[in-house]
Image 1: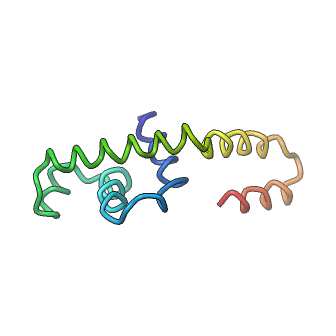
Image 2: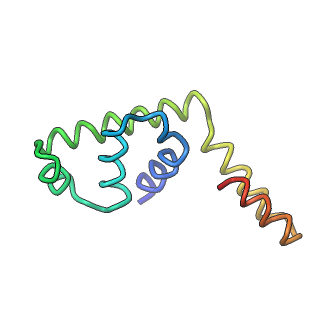
Image 3: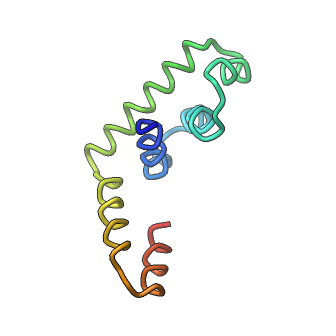
Length: 98
């Protein structure tokens, strides 16, 4: 479950750096909860091709995070926002992160 949440957060940060096929496959698996076989059937490719695509996308997302640290920075900011007592300021800060 932790891996799932981690890659979903990375995808939110870096999806614009991926190609359309990578985005569609990743989204179908991680966001739509389709199995690799269901995705393969929908795309007319093998299950192993979907597995390879997901692994490649995960590696790209990890590399982007290692270089840019956006998710780590967002997490630090989210933790700081929780400490803000003024609700209006907290809501404004949360809007910025969206």
